[in-house]
Amino acid sequence: MEFNNILFAFALTLFAGLSTGIGSAMAFFAKRTNTRFLALSLGFSAGVMIYVSFVEIFMKAKNTLIANYGEAPGTWYTVLAFFGGVIFIALIDKFIPSAENPHELHSIEEMNRRSGQVKDKKLMRMGTFTALAIGIHNFPEGLATFTAALQDPNLGIAIAIAIAIHNIPEGIAVSVPVYFATGNRKKAFRLSFLSGLSEPIGALIGYLILMPFMTPLTFGIIFAGVAGIMVFISLDELLPSAREYGEHHLSIYGLFAGMAVMAISLLLFL
Image (cartoon, rainbow, N blue to C red):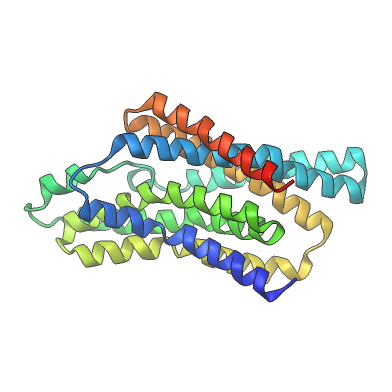
């Protein structure tokens, strides 16, 4: 495997992870939360991830496994790995304490209302644990982006952009409570920005551990598992988050727009 391909895959993963900093910057420099934009963007991200998971990633995993192990065993391996990915990310979600769940939404208006209030240690603890929770939660996303980019750079770009969009509200979720607690914008931005580092770390650890053992079976199982992880993230996080911003129909429009853009981009590279 060429070093340039590995470097490109890692750079994409770094971009996706550190986009939490975009959310943090939005919280500090925007005057209000653009709920329509966020709902549309989150729906778009979900559409990209769901479409590419079922149409491209799942099928590539299945074709690889069937080619090496036969029709029935290959299909079984693919389906089991897909649901294995779902269970893996669901367990990570389950063990994140609900009080510090990174999917809890925060708004920029919330920050403006409380900017002059007394510092709160509980809020600092919440912000810190939110950053930690996001770090744990984003670990498999880093592996997903990295693995996809190694297999197909164009596919990696699409997934990296989708995950970057979905990381923006998570950046807000970290920076708002930390800013409330400390009154320090730099500290809030830094903690939010660093929480996204778990994605490139996940990619690096995945590469170091898995690449020496990369066989068609390993690749097929990882790829099918990545599809499961991405579908779960889309249905459990992105669409519910978009709906909580109060723009349900926009999130659905964004969903199908994301699917259409992903479909067209895949057709262009046939």
